[in-house]
Length: 373
Image 1 (cartoon, rainbow, N blue to C red):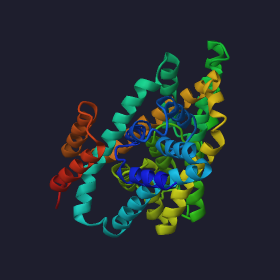
Image 2 (image 1 turned 60 degrees about the horizontal axis):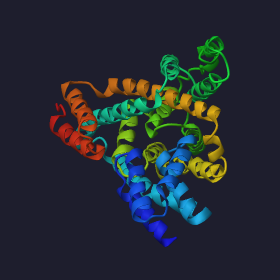
Image 3 (image 1 turned 30 degrees about the vertical axis):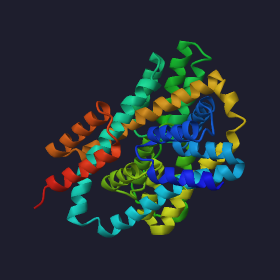
């Protein structure tokens, strides 16, 4: 247990670069260096983490902990991987709340936000190549993008896409067209628009992030879609700028991107809000990993379950595209911000730069170039 704790604490403090980088570091650590797992076992766990909702790299840590140390390893592996990032993000949130009006921080964030747009775009481009394997999935993704833009319930949209993708295997093409009209109608999925500001309470914070942890498939960047739909548009708890700042902090710091919840919880309700949001968003991952050990091998062999996941992932990517465009309108406001976004995207795609270094670069350029009166 001591070795398990120390290894996951070290990974929690040093795993920069997003979920793909985290998983690569775990493979190097647990397959090649420590030899806790064979490569086949590691890939089996990765497949399992992809089939359940939640943050994939955190779920990998929980799965590996479970393989190594049973239920105690399950808890310690996940907690030791998540807590370092949560503590770092919480500290940054304190500085942000108390000093965000300082010109120096304003300039830094001015330069970081375009980098975040580029990071999400790069993630979408890479994931689309893997996820959109058939013409049907491409059509499904486009349909989801159109429906999402009209204002819908995101969980229902994801569920509808998964069900539709599964039904595609069981019915004729004519049947799929009729069912798609039903599942993707705005009347079936739309939710009432809430224009008044909903009071912020710890219980609402907890339930909201619990819902995200239990329902979100795909990359951690899909978190953007959930956060913007409720926290910015429906409840008005955050502004567009605050949301981008939260995503920037979650991306820049080591560990899972889901620690963005820690930052947002602190903005809304201080330390209690940060604790409630962090526990709520990660709790479903622990429960799902504990429950799925015996079920995942059978699910992976199911063609219908695989089709359901394909539909959910494609719809998640459509949501990422939509939210990136929406947030880009408030971040790319002049030549400097467009330039930062462009060189960041080039660095990510062509030269595979670490996103943490690009964020540092964006912050430095933003501090120097921020228009001051």
